[in-house]
Structure formats: structure tokens, C-alpha cells
Amino acid sequence: RLASGQVGIVLDGGFFNRGGFYEFKLVGRDGVNVVADAHIAPSPVSWSLAKVSGYRNQATGSAISSFAQPVVLHPDLRSAPTRLSLATRSLNYGDLVIGEGAYLGVSPQGSIKLESWAQLTMLGTLEAPAGTVTLSRPANRAEELYNSDIIAFSEGKQSESIFLGADSRILAGGTTKLDTAARVALDAGLSADALRALYRYKGEVLAGGSVDVDAGLGYLVMAKGALIDVSG
Image (cartoon, rainbow, N blue to C red; front, side):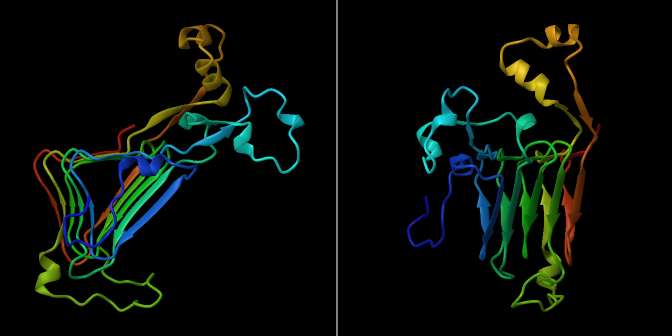
């Protein structure tokens, strides 16, 4: 909730789980603040016909919501990974802050992108297994259609940084992804040991992802204890 006199928009963590959206791009002109202990992990909803009998007999033009079941598929069964992008667009007030204990996560091979035109402070956790994490403070605005001028160097801009707090975690390590048949069998109640005995526990081992940090005209500051992990 915004304090009295503030202008902007407030979104709760559940916002990212409503509907079937796989990608979110949020831009706050004068700043973006993910509050302490917030949890953001997009979980798109899909329509399933797996346990619906007679769906072939539905009349043309019927609303799918009238007979299909809304489900959140396991990441192994989704058609694409999830992506999350947060950005600011003000040189004077455009700070981007990820508060202490906050968690931003995407599914395997997904991506998280944080871009600030001013200070970027990361005190929480970013997780993109076998995916990509990008933190940047661009030195130019080439992608801005109506404002592509190079950001002028100044002592003020130089003093800004990408700051990773002592408890910050950027996690893009490797992971595993089961094939569709194995995941469906597990969801149906079979155990992993049973599938192994039948040589049906199959999938893919995904290598560690990547982390790209570009502080632009400022600095990268990592407090003791900050972690960047792309192992695997």
C-alpha cells in the first residue's frame, strides 16, 4: 500500500500468478521497490483437458473455462520458461531496490533482468536455474526511441553503483529437467525408484546458467558474504 501523498502502483506477489502469463516486464519511471520478504515467482495457469470427459463434444464457440480445468503445470511440462524484468527510467529518482529477504525466481532456463538508470541495490535472492540473470546500469539509452542520448558523466552518476548486500544471492546453477513421460508418471503417483526400475526415469541435466553484471558509469560493490552461483 502506498503512503499518503505517494504516486505509483503497488502489486502483491500473487499478481504474477494470475492468468497464463510467462513473461513480465515492469518499468517504474521514478523507481522500483521490491519490499523486504516479498516473494515473486511467476506460476502461469494453463487450461487442462486431461481429466475432462466429453470435451470433444463441446459446441463450437464454447468458453474453454466452462469445461476445462485450470492447473499450474510443473515447469518440466510447460511450453516455455518464465521471464521477469524490472527497470527504472529516471536519472534522478530511478533507484531499483530488492529488499532484504525478498525472493525473485523463474523456472529452469528462464531469465531475470534488473536495469536501473540510477542506483541498483540487491539485498535479496534472484534465482534462475540454468538460466540467465542480468543486472545493469546502462551508460547509454540506445533502446529508448525518444530519449537515446548518451548519459552524461558526472560525479553523481559515478557515485552510484550496483550494490550486492551481505545476504544477497544470485543463483543460476545447473539443474535437472525430466522428460514429459517421467514427470507425468510422478504426478500420477509413481515413485522415482519405481521409474528407475523400469528405466523410465529419464530427463536432461542442464548446465549452469550465466550472470551478467554491468555497472555502467558507476561501480559494482559486493559486500562480504554476497553470493553469485553458476555451478553445475
